[in-house]
Image (tube, rainbow, N blue to C red; front, side):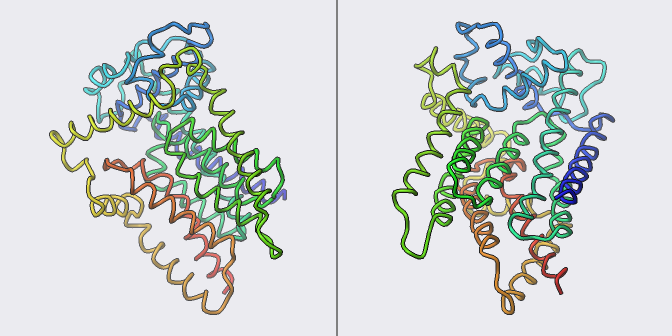
Length: 385
């Protein structure tokens, strides 16, 4: 236990250091989306001042995302001493105000530099924590310490991960709750406490991005598998367990969204509708100015996924690991947990391909943990040989 804790801490520190170095050197290219997420820290300021009548609550472009990541940046920036983020502007004006700063490093002498700098530190710390959780997840699934640690290191240096970790996006926060959810699912304890923990993780995941709903079928399947017994499937317990999970998830979701109560006309369905409308507008805009950024066909999405998830240096390792894994299955029984994990990864991959309409690397981030631990399975078999 102490050995695993020490390895996990080392992996966390390793990831944090490699993310903080370019941030402190200010060698990271600036993206206007960072200013959007920094501007959403207003959510905490509005709640802190009990300002429930502010029009920012109803501002479609700026607040069509749910509140999970907004609280993180709001509280984090407050801890750094930032009590006013109005310099960022409000969307969509935020885009036009800051687009001229792309794609160079943000100027150090600018009045907003400290906001960008501290928001990136918040993102790097959360992403590093998320990365380090691949190690205990690997241990839970039956991967030895060395292959699990190597897979975590590869995960930490993946281009998509380093991109997310060094920018003030919401994706690192999404990844953290994804990893916590996977840990809860593969803990394989059929207690009510564990079902509640799964629900809380799901509620937090969806509160960061609606994409978190793609894990709902995985939760339903893995819970059914965990509860299955030779004497027959316990339908009542499964229904009750799924109910506890969904109810705890809904409770967390609505606690994090008090604006649904004082602005009921702008609830989750209205936000989802506006999110779809804005996506359509973005597709139309980028189809005119940058057609390569829009992915409308299944073939273009698959090509984009392969290009971003499998960089050149990783492709060989992934193919070799798959060959070793398949070859070894001829002689050894494959762990059921590992098969379930790979099946979950296949569901996530199919889900991401179904909704990803932009050629944006970070949108493929939910797939990367499955690829990295899959490589860990190949390393495990080499290690045993």
